[in-house]
Structure formats: structure tokens, C-alpha cells
Length: 118
Image (tube, rainbow, N blue to C red; front, side, top):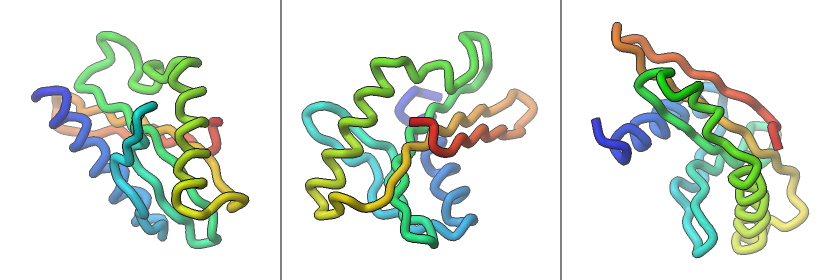
């Protein structure tokens, strides 16, 4: 499976995960010159969440969440603030979450979802 398809599949898994918890997805793959936010959702209690999704087919090169470097984390913070400004939500409560999706060779899928990591 190529990287783009794997990433899209993982983002879809997390979209369903969030909707299962009552969140409404507001945006997918929002992009500006500085980068991209995988998912933006609104929780039932009105908090905006920005989600970075990392998908892998094995742990050969480490856990999916290990791919979120300090540089990537700083970029996510800037992107979240840009999204809030562009969409007129400046001052709204928000958090940045990260999700790791691992597709195992036996057909199982593991999701490691971490809230408020940044």
C-alpha cells in the first residue's frame, strides 16, 4: 500500500473514531503554505480539536507516534492557530491530539489516540 493511501485510510479510521465519540468533523486535510492539518473536529462540549494522524503497517521503524518530532509539533501549533484565525474561531477552546494507526499483518488495526498532547 502506498504512503498516500495508507495515510488516507488512517485518517478515515480516526474520523470514524471521533464521530463515534460524538465529535463532528469540520475539516480534513486543511492546507496552507506552512503545512497541513489532517483532521479538525468539534467535540460535543464545544472544544475544537486538531488531530495529527500517523499510520504504519509495522513497528519496524518505530511506533507511528514517534514520527511526530518537536519540529512537527511546533508546526502543528502554528497551523492550529492559523486555522482558528482563518475560520473566525480565535479565542475558542482547542486542543491538539495525535493518533497512531497501526495495520497489523493479521488484519487487526490498533489505534493509539492521545488527547491534548500539545
